[in-house]
Length: 314
Image: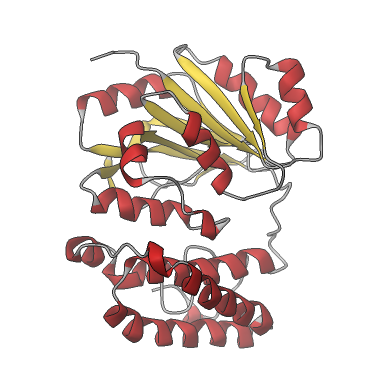
């Protein structure tokens, strides 16, 4: 077994030229040198691609003609040569020692399909926030997409990120398929990724609801349930979820956003019917038939809201 296997660093970029420059600089400063670096630029208009060409000529740059969201990473997966693929955002990077720690762990534990890094968020006021919120190794049912290693054998077996999701929740959908095929998603606290959390292209703040995030969270939840759960569970679960999301929309003046998301999910589900891949019963139980959504009304995000007690997550 190669103790220093080739690692592909797969970076997705969209209109964050300065952040991307910093990420690439940090990647090349790693003490682990057996790497190839791929940047998939999602049709940026801020000169990101030109910066990569001029300042980092060894990078394999893939320029998309339009923004295809998280499916941009798939273009990197298609050409990756590494035994492991490190998935990064354009504003996240591993600290020294993290790639070595990850490869050693994955080399010695064949059951690992995805190794989730310990993500430390560097906010705008330079406060460090533990996004992963864990300090010990453990099995997970999802991972944080701005810092994770994926075994290339897993990619060959189960494919790429679900392109229909566009943004948000692709990690939990991918983890479902990884676990369903017998691999594990393992959190590795010794592999640390710093996420600088640039607010460029992030439409959420502490005052305003992020319509885009609400739309995709609602829409993608229904898509994931449709793709991976049996009709018998969908019939039971979906009406309750619709009720909860509609109630949320009424309370917070976002009913149009919620209804648009539900309509979009229903339309896409018709197109995705042939791609349904029902999880085995063990995996369904692990995800509790859709409770990965994070509660009766909400899921995985707070949208900056101060919710009344009766609307808190379960």
